[in-house]
Length: 417
Image (cartoon, rainbow, N blue to C red; front, side, top):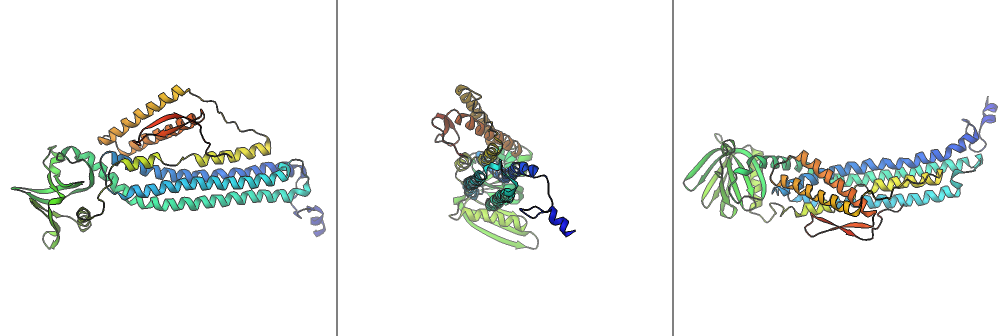
């Protein structure tokens, strides 16, 4: 039996699972290409990260445009994430370039698996193992880099739901706010409040709205009965004292005294802590709100190209397909539209973008619809930028950050594989 195994063993690798030598050799290019193609498994990791980032940018953009400027730390976190995503693109493409060069050198030395005999089978098999290992290492690195950015984004998840709820509350109450209340730092859902201002006293459930300069106590009855300007407004500069109290009858309360009145707020402990925190920010040097929508518009405009790694992986695979099988990449560099058509399409995109933002500014669109439209606009803009680049041009930002112009110029390829 042992003698029979030895008789059937391969003289080069001592394996006993023998096939026709010609078949084995002919399969090497396909086996190598299958290993190379696994590089595309990197793309979904980038796409998932991009989806999370775009969810937050759409949410924050919508809120800021509508004048809801709460949670100023969001922009700084999103800015770090955007830079991190740009670094992921660059590192991934650089790493793929290194893997590509080493792999091409290896398969060149073995004539791209053409016209080799069975004695070189083990050497060829090691090349397949090498490229599999290199791509697996690249994929592991990308997972690690993505996880680092996701850790930053995870910190925003606890703010996304409150920000969304703030926007929905603004949709309900904005028309009933006193004149001059535009930029909102926070909205507290209706709680029990007794407000005294001059000779007038209001009792009952009311919303608490913190703007950039004033706190407003808006009775829920004003919203239900559609009464305009019945909320009580107090400027932050008139705050005299803020005191917590607790009694067996009334429970926990927060009393805020102003120069021209007072507010006694009764609510559960966690809600009172939140209200007290807002008043604390008002009296501290910490920012109560972000200054404007300018920051989020810049973050969105400067976001890294979501398709850069996909293009790199596609070109990576195409190049090996060409070297192994002689299949030339079928890149269609023929512009599908004229320059005039591109400019017309761009102006249409600008008009649509302004229309959607105006609906958000007027609190006339929900988050899901807004995010859907912004995603469509951004994807169309990326495609337009790609079409324009093939004609030797690029986009140049204007100073207002939310408007772009087409500028004919030399285009630098982002990835030359």
